[in-house]
Image 1 (cartoon, one colour):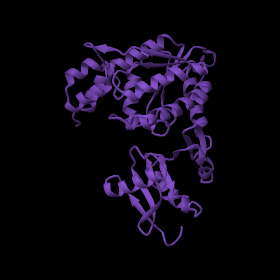
Image 2 (tube, helix red, strand yellow; image 1 turned 90 degrees about the horizontal axis):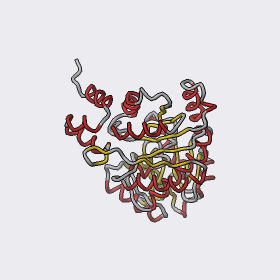
Image 3 (cartoon, one colour; image 1 turned 90 degrees about the vertical axis):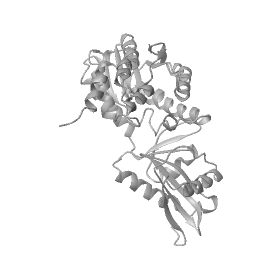
Image 4 (cartoon, rainbow, N blue to C red; image 1 turned 120 degrees about the horizontal axis):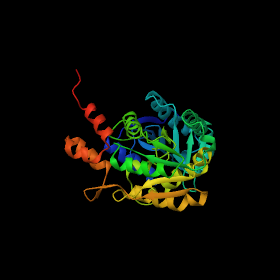
Length: 341
C-alpha cells in the first residue's frame, strides 16, 4: 500500500464514520444496507478510497475507488478483515459480492460456492459445502440403515427460536408424509443459542423415528446465503437473497441428499419469510422438488409465533409461554431460568 495512504478502523458505534463509509459505497454503486461488526478503510488525505466490512464470518461492502483499482489495495483491505474474523474463532469465511468480482477474490484465495445473475457467494475453503454434506450424510447413515433405499425424502429448514407447538405440528405433518425427514436447525442469530435450539428440537421430536436432525451451518438461510432474513430488509434485496439461498439448495444440497420435498409453514407475520415461501413455490418444482406449505398451527384463534414467545420470555410470563411451546421446550426453558446452586 502506498505510504501516502492511511488505514483506519471503523465501528458501527461511530455513526459519523459509518456515514462516511455509507456515502462512499453508494457513490461506487453498492447498496450498503445491513449490519456490520467492523469496517476498515484506506484514506488518501482524509478521503476514503477503499473500504470493506464484515458481519460474523461474512465479508461484504468491499469497494475501491475506480481511480485507485490498479494499486493493489484489495489485499490491504482484506488482510485486517480476515484477521479479525479468524481472531473471533471463525475458520469459514464467506464473501457476498457481485458476480463480476469472481476473479478479483479468486486471486485472494476464495472459491465460488454458488451464484445468481445478481450475487456471488465465495468461501475460503475449496470444498467446504461438499465436506459439510459428507458430514450430514454420515450422521444420517449412522441413524438410518436404509437411507440409501429411501425414495420419499423430505426436508424442513427451521429457526426454532424457541421450539413451539407450531414447529412440532409442522414436523409431525412432514414426518407423516416422508420416509425420511431431514430437519435443519439454523445456527445463526436468535435469542436462544444454537445448541439450546438444537436440544429443544431433539427433545421435542424424540418420539418420531424417521427424522434426521442437523445443525444447518452456513449453507442454509445464514448471514452468508441469506443476509436479508436477518436484517429484515424490504425491496429487491429480499428477492436477491432468496434466489441465492434457494439455488444452493436446489442445485447442490437437495440432489446430494436425495430430497424430493421441502415443507414450510404458512407465514402470516413476516414479509421476508412469506416472500421466501413464495419463491420456493415457484423455483423448487422446476428442479423436481415439491414445495408443501402447511397451514400454521393456531392457538386461541391466532397462528403460533416464536417471536411472540420470545417477547413473553423477556417478560417471564410463564403461564402464557406454556400455552404456546411444546412441553419439552417449556421444561428446558424453566431449567434455564432456575437458580443454580
